[in-house]
Length: 506
Figure 1 (cartoon, one colour):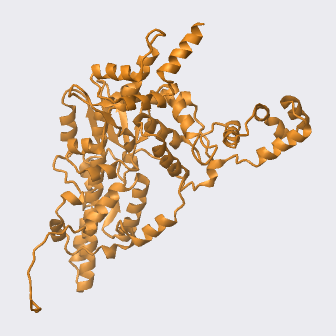
Figure 2 (figure 1 turned 30 degrees about the horizontal axis):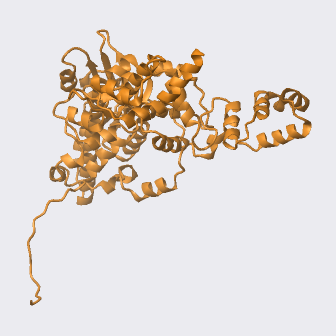
Figure 3 (figure 1 turned 180 degrees about the vertical axis):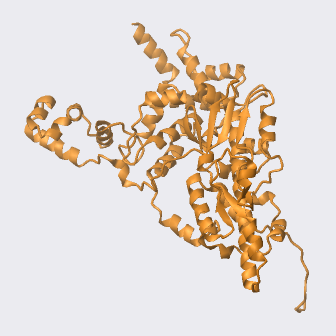
């Protein structure tokens, strides 16, 4: 076969991530504080952008123009949704712009974006417009020290797959301070979450087994006790020493000898062991940038018993595009380089205003659907969480799953039960034997506890019997799943329970 040069024409499709699309995706992932910093940079660099400092409840015509300047304001046109009545879903959808365009790259036409902003050179906007894959950001991520919260979260997902435990565990980890202590009482947390104290104690005990040893303790004594137990050194004498550790702070060696019943040498040895422990284990990990978490969305109970969802407009930066100044500058004589610069900056300003508006609308739309799906949790607590995944939300609001994933990261919802990251509300599901709605794993676990608590010595339920009962109730569950849920509840086997009942009766 002879080899010879020749020309071939091939046609192929390729998805192009335009700078504007990269920016829109980046804005969607940012927290409200990060977004405010980004917009501040853009306001300094772009001459056609102005901060919209008018009150959030000001009329649209006042916010849209300033001193005769035609302005385009970036704001969420509908910043509140009321979920109530039979038509809650339709009202939530209609109250937000129905023609909102999903900014996910898999569903956005890149050719159209190129045509509309063909003069836009993102490099002209400076550091504020860096792409998601910026090398400097990648290097910073590699060199960043892992935080205590991240370290504990990784261990939580390895230790359990139970959705209720993951929910409670994530909430408790957020409450642990930089020193590694849980300052809130489990009773108060249970009241906020609507969770059983026993479930909270189970998850808290699980967290106290994580590294660094001593993390999750509620006071110094508990922190030191956890570390001593890990070293198999917490005997009754040492426990007595811990119970009276305030005597160590006073330097009362004789008092320690008297309370522990140990001689001076043993007490001095225990003092040396205690001083070798780590009183603040959390400091071994990076604390990250300390900043207050401001909610992106508020959820309040409405007068008719439904839920009202609104954006936190106080944390949303708003910008105006100064068209009057653009008209004045673009009409002046200038060389091609200056004209291109003016056109680029004006296009960037318009796109930023549009991206901010889209971001706000998307957060409100996703949050509204989450509240609609998990209304049982807001009304009754953790045991009424419904199974939920990204696809369910994405299908309901007609967006791409990756868009929903970005929205639920680093976005927080203030509710009557506390402050939660949006990703908290996604839980696993267990199928129904009757072909109906799936059951939340937490609800099934709660039902297993109810069945066992109601049993008698003459009718102790085996795991197989529990499976039969649940299947009769329409819950499709395997025996090994029942056994796993029973173990996470710290409930003994049927044989152990029967033996305990018999001994108790004797």
